[in-house]
Structure formats: C-alpha cells, structure tokens
Length: 144
Image (cartoon, rainbow, N blue to C red):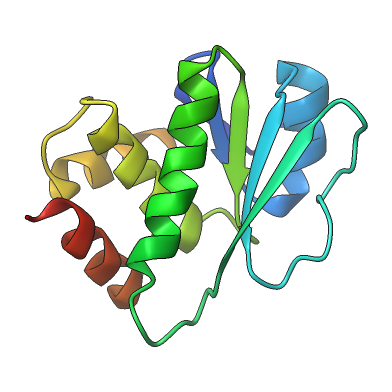
C-alpha cells in the first residue's frame, strides 16, 4: 500500500491528510496527532494511546487565522521537543497542513523565510498548496 504521508523531520514529524492518520499511528508509532480540521469531531483514527489535539482552522476562512496557526505550530514543536513522534493533518494535506509545515520549518530553524520553507515542504510533499489567507497568517507570524 503506498504511503501518502511524509516525514517533515525524519522519523519525528509527519504530515499528510486525514486518511493518513491510521498509517501514521500504525507505521510510525506517532504519539500525538495535531488535527487542523475545524470540521472534525474526533480523531481521524481514534486510538487509546494517541493524544489528539484539535486546532480548528477553517480551510476556506476569509480572515487570516494567525493565532490558530501559531497554536498548531506550537503543539507540533512542543511534542517534538518532548521527544514524541507527532503527526499533523487537515482534510487533504495541502493548504492548512502546508502552512503549518512551513511555520514548523521556520520555528525549528530549518529555513529562514516563508518562501524557502515552502520550497522544502513542497519538495517533501508536492501537493502542498497554501492559499492566500493562510499565507497572510504566516506573514503575520514570521515577517516581523
């Protein structure tokens, strides 16, 4: 079965879509799932030993959701820094997931700019496609 999710940071941070959560948990032993879907009511693959954190980002939000993106990035970094394997996802793993991947790369010092981080994220996961309000949120957070 093809693997539809990718490692943003090898063997530590994984990203994809909602349909990839089961594989992230089963194949990578992910301990924390950061769910970026505002529309979700439970973990995409509920498992007793997995911590589910929901950050309700709207995929078609008209206003930049910079505070919510910051929360999502912080949850990913926090799990990573505490030695846990973490996965994050939205519905399809393109927009919201891409924006959090970009913010995570910058926050970890893996890249200096949004453009550079976006190129890295797209080289790992080619479907990453950040929408204008998502980019605006990133600019508010990282172009200070």
